[in-house]
Image 1: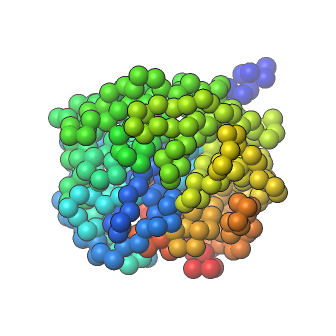
Image 2: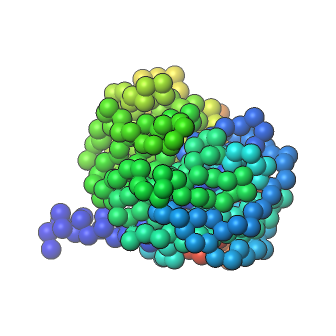
Image 3: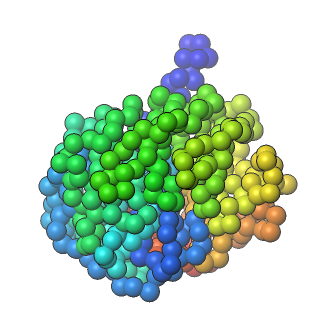
Length: 415
C-alpha cells in the first residue's frame, strides 16, 4: 500500500470517528448582559453569569430535517451538564465523541438554559434544561431524514437553529420559549453542502460557516434575519490543503481560524459588517504526524490554543501584530494526552481540556504571557470518555458529554 493511500485511509477513519456518535451540540444559556456565538459562549467570553431559573418544556421538540416526532420526555438526574467538544479529536467519533457547534444563548422569551445534543447513532436531537448544576431531559426528537445529523449552530438571539445532515442538507429550526424545536421553512432544506461536518456562526448572527472535512472546504452564508434563509457569501474562505475539522471565531469577532487536520491551521481577519475574510495566514503542524483539530482562545482574544494530535496544546499570540507568534514554552501538556475538547472557564479564565482516550479532564492556568500550567486533573470513572466540554450558565461548572450523548458534570478537583 503506497503512502497516499495510507494517508487517505487514516483521514477516512478520523472522519468516521468524528461523525458517528454525538454529531453536534448547541448550548443555549440564560445569561445577563451576554451574547455569544460559535463554541460555548460563557466559556469563550468569561463574562456570562445567570441568575434566572430555567424552565423546562414538555412538548417534544421537532427534529432536524422535517417536523420531527418527539418521544415522551424523560427527566435526567445528572448534577450538571456538559456539552460536547468539537471537530477533530474534539468532535464526534465513531464510538464516543461529539462536535460542538453553536453558541450558548438564551432562547427568545425564555429564562431557561438549554443544551441541544444531536446523536448520529440514534438519529435524534436531545433537548436538556440546565438549572443549579442539574440537568433535565426535556425532549428527544427524531430526525426524520435519509441521513444522520452532523452539526448544529444557532443565532445569538436564540430564535433560530441550523442542523446539517450527512446527505448534505442544512435545515432551519425555530426555537420556542420552552426550548422545543419546530421545523422552519416548511421542513425544506435552506442550503446544501457536500458532506457537512461542522457549523459555526459569527457573534452578530449574520454569517454561518459550514465546513466539509471530506471536501476540504468551508462555505460561508449570509443569514436573512427575519426568515432565516441562507444566501451564499460572495466569497468563501480559500483554504490551504487539508481536512477542515473546526471553524472558530475569536470572542471579539475579528479573527477566523480553521483547523485543517494534517494541514495545520488557517487564520483570517474577519469583517462582520461585510462578512469578508482577509489575507490568509497559515500555521503548519509541528510534526509530520501531527493533526490540528480543536481551537479555543482566551476571553480577550489575545491567544489562540490549538489541540494538535501527537504534539500537545500549542499556544499563539494573536494580539498586537500582523502575524501569529508561538508563545514561549509551547507546546504545553503531553503528546500522550492531547485534548479532544477545550473550553475556557468564565469564572477563573482557566483552560479546561478533555481527553476521551485517557478518560481525563485537565485544568490549566493561563499566565499573563499566554503560557499554560496544569493545576488539576480528573480521572474519575464518572468522566468516562469525555468527548466534549462546555460550561454551565454560571461559568463555574464544566460539563462533559461522552458517547451516551447525555450532559454530565465534570469532576474537577478544583471545583
